[in-house]
Image (cartoon, rainbow, N blue to C red; front, side, top):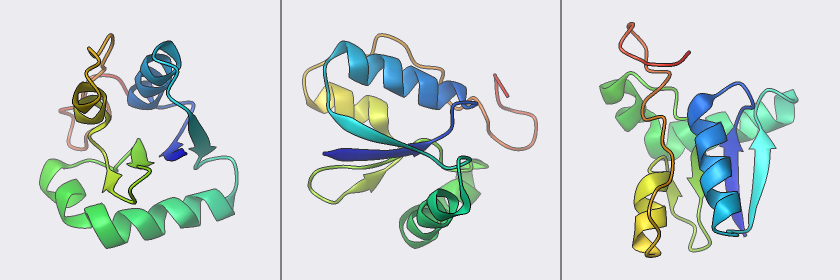
Length: 104
């Protein structure tokens, strides 16, 4: 099952959830703001797999998905498209740093 690290306050995370729910994609949503254990798990994944990308894009890395094959990605839209699904809703880089984001 896919693990998704995100937050209920994150517009991108909510868009992922709506899309995954629509296509009946099974996933476990782990809210990183629910407790410190969840936050530590997310930070460890981000720091190991996504830190350079996050720095280059001014992004915190939410939502982060761990796919069934172990791949760690922030590109959930591309994952949906790889399954042959159309992305119904995407907020796209809502919470980038430096004022360039569109939703946070």
